[in-house]
Length: 193
Image 1 (cartoon, rainbow, N blue to C red):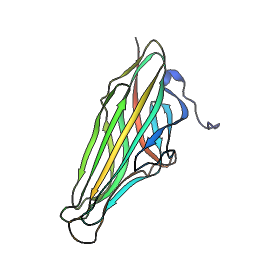
Image 2 (cartoon, rainbow, N blue to C red):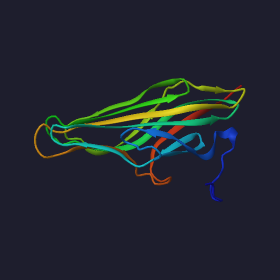
Image 3 (spheres, rainbow, N blue to C red):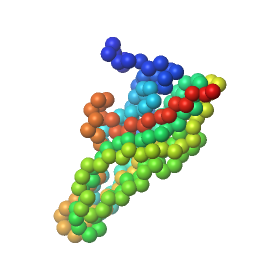
Image 4 (tube, one colour):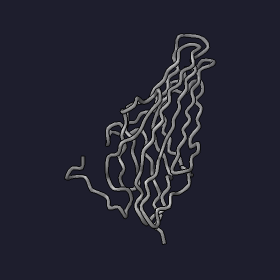
């Protein structure tokens, strides 16, 4: 819902401000638990935390696959240029404990891995990912284009080989400006000549 104190962005400056539905599935994000906000040159995808943990000699994994349609205004070529999200990992300083984070992004007909990170024994901290994306541009120079954007994220945790400690990992945020913003994607709008 647009209120009086929200500035609506003109189409020629990027995406028009609006809330858009997203399709989600995976063990880390139940269907119907997310939505997107497009505004200017960015898209924020909002849902609750994705989390997994593994006890001694366990392996656990959580995944979240997100798809949304974006309306690209006429007169531009547009491509995602940056992805930002926050998380945390608590890896016991014990043999065998570790976790991984893998993120794949797609836009139009192109896609690729944008982040593959490993966290070893003893890593116990919040982390921020601010990743440049190099996907093909969508050409809307002569007419508006509706295209798909997607993010697939997998987090995995391996429990320690011994002891009672637990390996845990999650993606969350401390940014409360738009509820629980998990992903913020910045797009480059290049005017057609």
